[in-house]
Length: 248
Image (cartoon, rainbow, N blue to C red; front, top):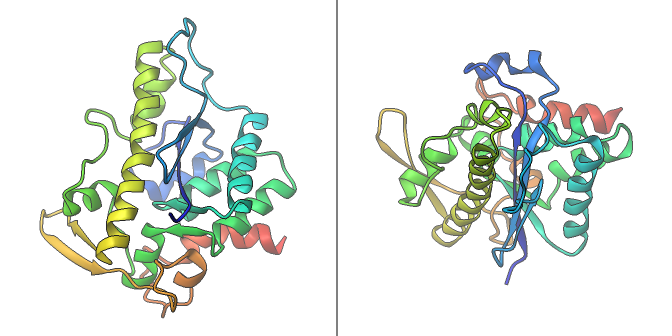
């Protein structure tokens, strides 16, 4: 079986609805990070603890962020491919900002841009010039979507309420996100296409481009596609932070 690991994180800082304004709020902090592998083994930071009686910390410490990065590096060294939805432009960047300065952020930048990272959302940007949301992808593929009643933008306020029961819901939301990303990846790999819904509710089909070995495109391979970027979705919007680290 092909070894892969789906990776996702949730931020600690409340952001406006307009993501074009988000850079002014960096660093975001990390409330929860989570991975699930091809055998459905889940690892989460902080680890869910049903016996806990005090609230979880508001965000991961720098040491904890370093441990998340080390976990990803170790898995890649064992032959795993990291799977994300918009991980290049978001999750890897946030993690790099939260880790200790120096070599770890540079290693994360290299991994995010590598052949060991498949970012479906970014591949969509490279091929079509835009990406749909993870929820719209799940809707189009007839798959279970995100946890109802919570959104990523809502999660920081819920997590920071220090209400333990609500924090447990946030941990569940994070686990669900990596699991649906994993299921979606496997569905696309099997069908070789993504059916997604538009904001207007119409269904569209995107035939996922493949590499010469017929594998789903990695970030490295996606960057080799003819550039169809538009003014709102230029590739540098996703790659700029990593390129700056690697050139610095």
